[in-house]
Image (cartoon, rainbow, N blue to C red; front, side, top):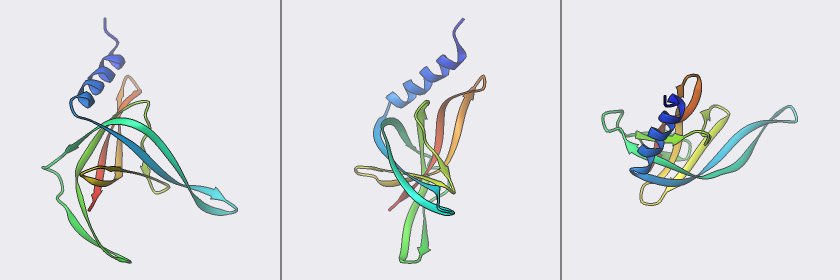
Length: 129
């Protein structure tokens, strides 16, 4: 009998291999420092992922920010194989760039589990134009 965890990892690996993109994630974390917080930047990768467009999801929007406006596209997603690590929270921001597409920020991370073990992650992305 085939191990379900390894079988699912193989399926995720196959899916990524159909249209792979190599990225380097720039992680910015807020870490405790002298009674407050400071930002710590680290580099993760290179990591092989699959980027895809979820065209049926939310369309792009323009946001007003302090220095002006920015256009974002919320229709992108990413598939990544465990044990690679990716995060999105108030204290952790993961970003990466892809030539020809632009700069992405990881907006949400959904772990994919089989028998209680994380085998991969599906991530919602924000493309900043």
